[in-house]
Length: 458
Image (cartoon, rainbow, N blue to C red; front, side, top):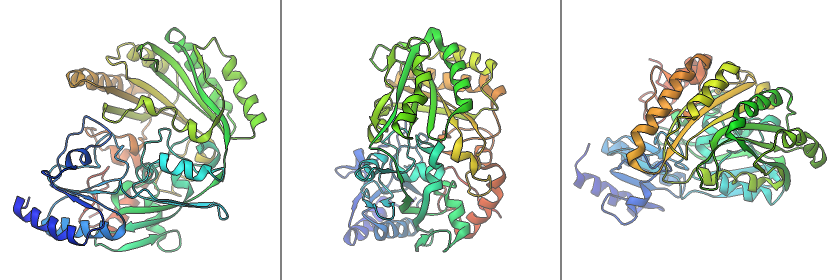
């Protein structure tokens, strides 16, 4: 690493022509700017470049090259593994870049790389339009899209990346490209699932779809004593869902602050209101829920409904894997493991993928997980640092006990920072070698490696 005085000199030079803000450790605002969503992450960059556009990103990248420092790229800062920041390197912070421009005539939206779904959804819903976004509105658009894009509309309209038209990309050598199917089909293929490995995405253009202003959705919460019946019902219900209908399940804790363990389902139906109301009746008639929150709701409101369960600054550790099937044995193991959860903020989430997601070929985008099925996510989340060891150990032990039910595939956006084996290869499966080839062409020295890294093919 370069000396502090050299970094200070480079920072002053950068700031002279920089539209954004350049921060060093002693500067006012540095402590807040270095934080990401996961409070477990405590890294101290040598320099934070808070960018206001692609020219600022190019300038920050050039300074990092001059100083010989590694870079991390922050969009929404929501990645649980903390790869949006870096010790002793340069954080290229896109979070001030949150502009959203909607064209209702062409049903498209262009959004800057630091925006979150909380920025995009209100803008598009003004015109009763939407694109598949995350299930938590604080999630960054860039990270979610480049790695996949699971959300409430995916059964009907595919993943976020399936709706991508164009990416403005700053390359490792400082060029600014408009990447689409025509300009560079290989690179555009890689960007749809390959994460931040190929450049810094400073803006995205998406197709939009007619959604809202009201859809039907919300949570159904049952006593934990009904967990087995609830998960069996969930499994049966997901076997015959319409494309417009998404259903997730969770073993979680009551949101009323009591910490009581519960079994829950959360649903969204984006089809015609009468059709949606009919579709959710069987969910509402199952058992005697503690909470029945399913009904007409604004699409924008549904996308904020789970935000309170993932507060910024909470300490988080995740494990995740696709399942071969949601078998009786897998359900029993989940219930047993959840009974030992040491934190009232911990939960298991089961995401069901079907519909439009599964009608894209495995090799059509870099994201290869196109079979109907379930992704299982272990979310250990807590507040007090004294609980860290117990919470992490619980997540690891759960993953170990669930291993017999895991498929080969991993969702790259859910990988944490201490994975064993080769989780990135598992995340991309048959597409990994092609991604390595495209990486070697576009970033042969692996400048963009503070991510779920795809190593360039030698």
